[in-house]
Length: 325
Image 1: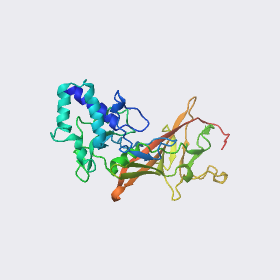
Image 2: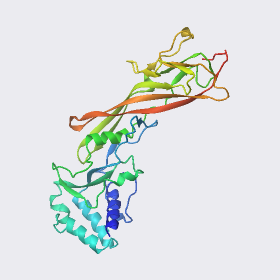
Image 3: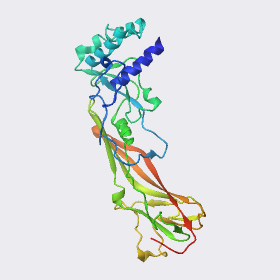
Image 4: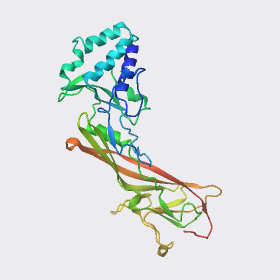
């Protein structure tokens, strides 16, 4: 019977932590808890167009955490609806009634203390609903926590956890690195290729996460710090030789090519292929690195893992003289 109890508890609490606009009813409308006051909200509300970043270390934001999930009145209505069905079994329902109603240790869902605390349980990171680990924070019985008291042991929601959840919603601009000659044109062996991004192409991006039930928030900001070029072949020279192009004070990377530069000036960010790609192409990959910082309620702040996104382009290189910039 214990396996059924745990499974049912997870289903019920997932309903209590539903994301607005999604249906997590447990088979009956009476099982539903309106969690709008307990859900994490984001600004902007929906991720904008663009690309998510991946952490350079492989780190990922937490799939879930512990947080307030219901008031005494809400939990009472939801649990009594479940108990009335009878399907969980007498022993499980009896144990639940003892825990929540009969003073072992709680009495009548703590309704007498409704203004003094919340029922806590697992809450899914709304950005990771498909992650099997998102149910790992749920427990069979909710914890009653008085306001100001320490929360139950476990991954308790904090401004830092909110900042980590906002990391999932960072979207960097859908901008391909500008090349001269243009990557759509056939490149020439030994011809310098200039690469650059204007500051307007890669502005800092911020997402704010809030949990109003606890009055906490965090803003996560991604700021570009550099560009790395990978020619896709060892038969190329990179500028600089590391392939790492730093960001300028004005927020741009590299410099725009001008006709006056010709092929004698070495670009501050770019490359030159030394061998034809033959009948195929080289994959030129530009990887932008973003520094991720956060600040939150109560003067909290910190760093999260740097994020990157790869921008690959197919480049044809031939030993020809015609140059089209």
